[in-house]
Length: 202
Image (cartoon, rainbow, N blue to C red; front, side, top):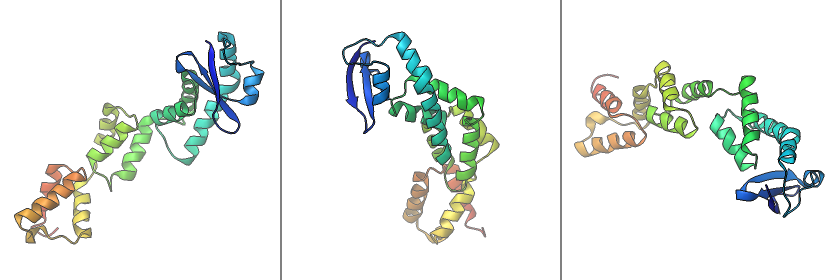
């Protein structure tokens, strides 16, 4: 690997750009310590030394710090490490460390997420957000099977909050309300079930 460029990253660190746009972010003192210079090769031995002595530990400390503020999925942590200039080997090391010490479990994360949001978000919205965070569809399905989202309760709460009276609405107004609920991600079955039930005492 040849060092093609060294550019400032912040006040104390620089990006070491290697061939194929592969990038390491190191403190300037570390760059001097490992003899890294533009236009010169970076040996595999030196690269492994940087990983073992510097980046593995730094990546581990970074993910532990990130988890202090809020729960995160594996994909979110990997994205943060990549944005911070950590190579895949360092990210793998940090993620494996978290898993070995049970600091990271996407299934547990999903269960907590559903538990926290099931009273204010539709099932479709929860599915979408968990997939975006990197959870597999099968894992999400398993979690939702164990912890179903009560969409009908949410819809009833929405109707009460808005002081709506579907039984007094004309077809156009009723259709508009159903469309608004659908945009919030609620299923047609849940919407129809609640709006039908509102004709009698809730």
